[in-house]
Amino acid sequence: MAAKGSLTAKGSINFQDYDAYGFDLDHTIAKYKLVTLFNVAYDCVTNFLVNERDYDPCIKEDLLKYKDFICKGLFLDVSKGNVIKLGNDGTILKATHGTHLMSREDVQKVYGKDMQWEMTATVRKHLRNTTSEYRFFENYFDCPGLVATARIIDSIDQKNESLDLAEKEKLYSKAWKDTLDSLHNMYSPKNFSAEKGGYFQIVRNDPSRFVEECSADIKRWLKSLQQPGKIVFLLTSSQIDYAECLLEVCLGKEWQSYFDISLFHGRKPGFFTDGNPFYALEKEEETEVVTELQRNGCYSQGNIDDFNKFMAKELGKEDLKVAYFGDNICSDSYPSKHFANWGTVLVLEEMDAEGYLCSDGTVPGHEQDAEGYLCSDGTVPGHEQDAENEDTGRGVKRRKVLEHSSLVTQEEMDYMLTDFWGPFLVHREGKPKAPVEMNTFWGDVIGKYSDIAVPSLEYLAGVPLDHEFDSFCGNPKNTLGFHPGRPSSLLP
Figure 1 (cartoon, one colour):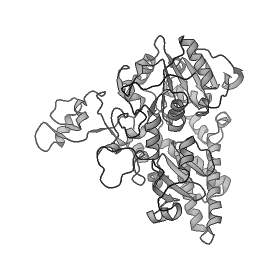
Figure 2: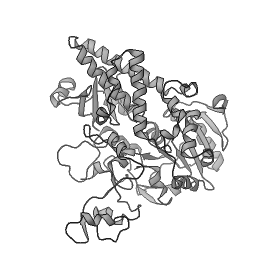
Figure 3: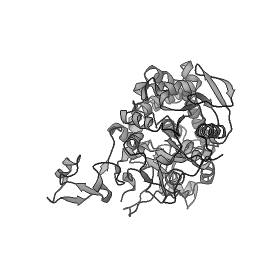
Figure 4: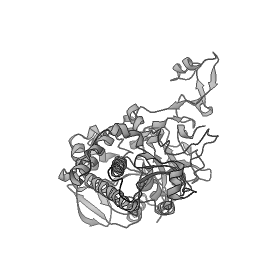
């Protein structure tokens, strides 16, 4: 029983029209302190690689020096030791060998004159890391592993100049396999209770070091969704022990009161495809299989069909409209749209890092920003300082007015934005023309499987629930789905 489509004939969504609202946890409700996350994760990865796999200790040093190499959405061509920024048509937009930039001629020598990556069709079909031949890095939990692998590849080349290419490729593949082992060791769910692997031990000791408390506005907004005839649910791939540790920071000890049902260890995207049963939870451990879910319950694993049955029974109807809010393109937006036909809201932190134009009329004090104006005549609250930037003495002049929320720090911007790789959504060559379209692989996926993209839940908490949001309409060339407006990289 699939939920009803999310788009209206006008190409817009209105949250008041939905029957259920679902939320991911990590990077959605739980806003991570990214600098801490990056550094702790990198330390855990490199400690494992040095201590357990005997790699050169030099890889443990100077992550700050390599922060410009961090970029969400890159691909590792494992046996070749190459890191790729991929275009929406499969063209390699930029590449490195290890951390070293490849020239256009270098790329053509490896991949042909058209610079097409042969694995593009496979990735596009599954949007999962389904083979050992490649790995894509679509979230900030595993990006530190890419930096470590690239630095190991540099070391392999430096120390093994006399080896032929086939032997080097074996070493490149081993480097990634070892790094993947380090990530599994760090994030293995059983390590939270066992206090092993490094990462979970540190989080458990001080979770407030890693995630922010949700604002009073977000908490009020979540409560406002709990209306008669509606369901609000949590669906996360995190196991309950780790998730509860974070939720108590984000929402407090009474976190369960914000949701009508809470689903953990959902194994997304498998929740939508694999048919795993639901399990009851007792003292944070899975017990017996559950065939009938109950309101206010907490469950582990599960599948979309049984969950749809629960919602239909609770709401007394089957033609459900469900909106799901999450940060992960491949685990949240893609499967919930493709397999369940849910409405999809992508929480895209890069928007906050880049800055965005408040052009959709949802942000008070930015009424003139829709036309790209600098508000310098003192009539718009919050823009009194703009007058200092007005050099003509007249009321207003055209200029992009970019906003960042208070949730993102300058240090986080320095880690999320990269001059080396360029923006996540677009690859610019020369002076851009208006309008700027998404031309990266992930920009294409966002446009197809997300209805709208927002910088944070904090933004949505300030918008009336019955607001009509323009959507992407399944069209990557349409940038109207960004709210409150297009990010800086998509502005001319």
